[in-house]
Picture (tube, rainbow, N blue to C red):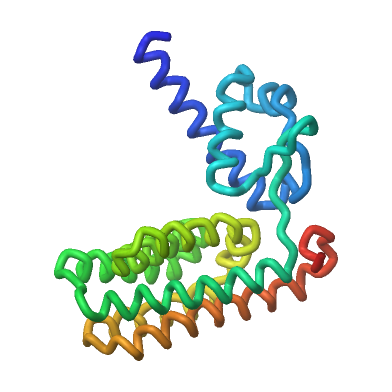
Length: 229
């Protein structure tokens, strides 16, 4: 395949991947549902090649799971698994915040401030999708401060598993505002070099996020895919 055609094919696959993510996040493609390449190709007006590549991308970010001899299905995790993952995320993010307080660079300080301002703007615009993406970048930047590749990889793996749960509640304006207030408190502790306080605030932020999510589960208790296994 010529290089230009290959790039075009990859761009198409990325676009389809983003569309499928939104369909999964919105619940239009439900947890546990099988992804049918032929049906998706017809729906999106393309061949099965880009669909297949997009599904590979979704597998890579943990949204779908390939089951041998059965097909590819939207990932499901139980509430119990979700709670355990949050506990591990709290420990990892706390560790990263503590490390950040000890060696925050000026460039990273500016990036943190830009992300916080961007999330404030997303709150004002009631733009849950924009807030969610900036929130992921804030946490990724914070984890990068720990300078521990294994910790970063473990955190990224946990985040991938939680996408199906977390994306839904970020559309609530009050949750976005509370979340970013906590982000600012963490950053202020880091900027002051208060390592222990930064650790505690980061852990509390993750656990408070878990509580906000649990509150949404009560509202969504009629959804079978959100019931505890």
